[in-house]
Image 1 (spheres, rainbow, N blue to C red):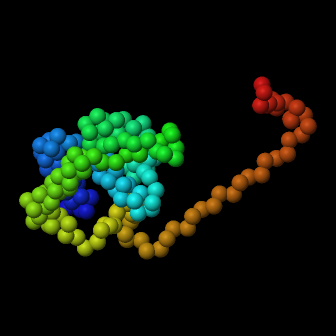
Image 2 (spheres, rainbow, N blue to C red; image 1 turned 90 degrees about the vertical axis):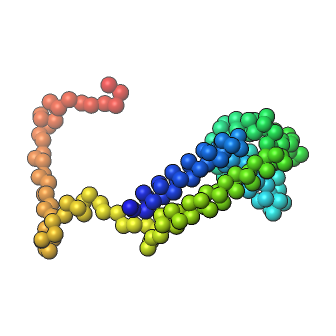
Image 3 (cartoon, rainbow, N blue to C red; image 1 turned 180 degrees about the horizontal axis):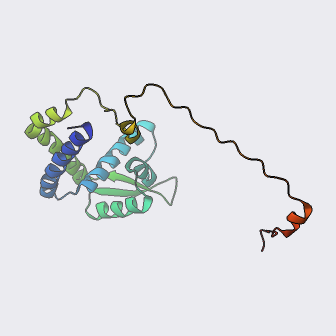
Length: 180
């Protein structure tokens, strides 16, 4: 099993576990991701002595602003996020987790602890590898003959010089123009 297949298997284990746990929590993985990003940005904002806006969440999540805005509206309606007006920019909003949103985020994080506890041996087996990047065999390398050791010389084509056209030959050629 190559590294990509191992990663796929870990992803499958995590996805199945999340579908079960997230369903019990009433939280989709996407919602969990947003709650985690909001918390991450809250902490960064406090450390940098600034406020967080939607653009910060968009940057962290790697989504477009419309998607993030729609999700923020959904999370606000579910009372998982509180929205405050920005005192420096009347157009901007500040997003912070509500107590309920932070509790759900923490429960979501504990779901990964539970996954690791229940599947530790399988995940450890999948993670055992010598290197993180396995060499790829390219199609070109596979087709190269291995018996020949001397490289073939490339042929260089010489371009033939066109004979000069007489004035009469040039007059017979159609005149091309960019404008018709």
